Image (cartoon, rainbow, N blue to C red; front, side, top):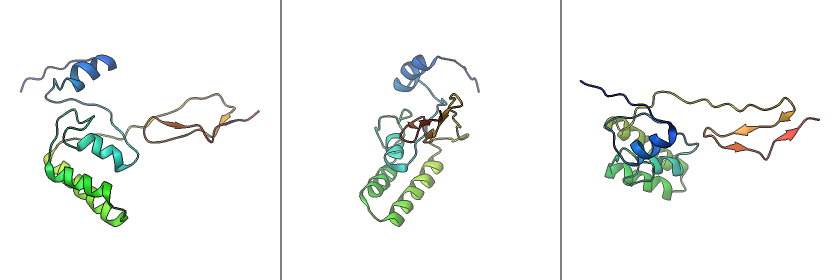
Length: 128
């Protein structure tokens, strides 16, 4: 096997590689706090961040079913089946969980963040 490793800055990587689909294998960072809508954006056929063009009609149906139900047990089952199918298809290889940090001055308190990069400022205050 011959591997041609290329390095890009983030803007170039996003446009030249991910959005163009010009790759055989790539790594990227992707995180979402909840299965909906995150899993649909990543796994649905033709979805916005489905850069690898993954497509499985059964996964699409399960994502639709999970989004449409108000029954928590049914929704959990749908997402578990999605995980199983995506892993069987080897569509993605989750290598690790990304840990993010936020640096503030000592008097800034109450910083809270989601698994994604979003920070919740509603609980932030200054200890002065």
